[in-house]
Amino acid sequence: MKEKLDLIKAEALKQINESGALDRLNEIKVNYLGKKGELTAVLKSMKDVAPEDRPKVGQMVNDVREEIEKVLDAAISKMERAKREAQMKSETIDVTLPSKRSKLGHRHPNTTVMEEVERIFVGMGYEVVEGPEIETDYYNFEALNIPADHPAKDEQDTFYVTPDILLRTQTSPTQVHEMEKGSLPIRMLAPGRVFRSDEVDATHSPSFHQIEGLVIDKNITFADLKGTLAEFAKELFGEDTKVKFRPHHFNFTEPSAEMDVTCFKCGGSGCRFCKGTGWIEILGCGMVHPNVLKMSHIDPEEYSGFAFGVGLERITLLKYEIDDMRLLYENDVRFLKQF
Image (cartoon, helix red, strand yellow):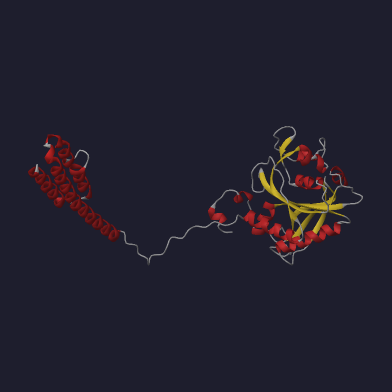
């Protein structure tokens, strides 16, 4: 048995010394020390050894195993170290090379302008309020003095979910929700997404954003409206900006007006941007109609107020001199990175 173990040991050490790859060393380990290896086979043949000799033979097998393991582990460690050193030489990093810059995003032009408008009105004491994008016909039309048979409903191409449920065409319903709470006075700004069944072109989209404001208090007059919007225009477009109000008609305000601002491109002298007029139309506004106050359970004899609404995309296009609204939604990085 001793001669057999010596032969196994000698052959194993020879193969280890001649091995030139880690895979080969692992193979040798399995062949000699594995469950079906040479030394395991010797232990299984112990039944043929005389009982009094079994402890001695078992000790010899263990001694051979330990010696093979020792040499094998040393060979594996040496080969792994050499492999790691070769890998480090081949993967050397040149720290003098310029690094790869991470591409960081930034706010969308719409978001930048919306935050600026909110900042201006919050500075005047307004509260920013959000409302549902899915509304009832009552809040979107009737509570704003647009009854079922009113022709104004035909002027707005509306997305209806059911005959009474629709995607809001304006953020004005948010104002009604706030008035119905009965907490007066009110100074609120309602920005949000609205929907109209429009064809997509340079100035229209089926989904866009509006920013509407509402003030309800005692002794509010048109002078308060003019002063507020004049200050807003100066903050947004520059200190030298002037405003002009033209009579108009909106169902939920009376009297109503549209507001123009002096062209911030030419300063009001006339240019291609303002089509030679020196003025740019920017928003609609007016005093809250008494019927709207009554439907929200506010006494128009005691309270009055004003409201205004501006398209977010419109002032974004004007502020950044963009000539096509579709550019805001195409997510073209070449366009967006300019802002």
